[in-house]
Length: 110
Length: 111
Image 1 (cartoon, rainbow over the protein chains, first blue to last red):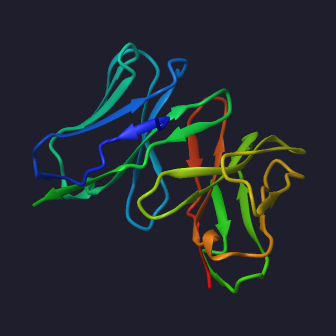
Image 2: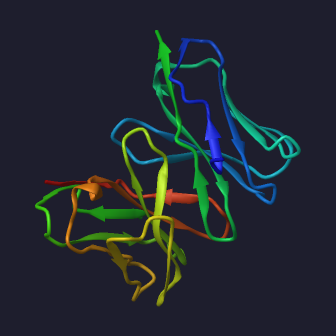
């Protein structure tokens, strides 16, 4: 079992719709969870982090964490063409390291 | 404040050649990391450092070496380059919490 698994995608959504990205992780001891956005040919950029169960909202982005189910998700509301990118889920592996999922590619159709 | 810088941006190596990928940060972060990213794959950790003079292996260290003589610099050395090392290499730093910040990357091709 991979440490961090994401929907393989690609995920295509119309402009203005909600994009929903899912991530599961294997280590019950993980405490910190991150979403990175990566445009084609660019480096990953941190967009959200969440440490506690529940929802965390930042602008059009909402991260949701359920530690009992070992599940973290990212919702992108009112999706824009500029949201077209690959989204990487990351989970802390220990005090020093993160484990990354393979990413979900999102395409927003105008 | 440049954050994390990496040089070169692109490089083509012949099999068996060696090179050093440079990474410099101006955020005064103790933790630094080297990752590789292959097409359609996630980030794989090569080496990391928790401070000057301290380095440790990640998931895929074979064929690479690192050193950390200063807080700012964390070079990655490739010895005897192989086609399997064709990848995009990212350097990252981390401050007091877990989130990591990435440099722009180096795209390496070994032929």
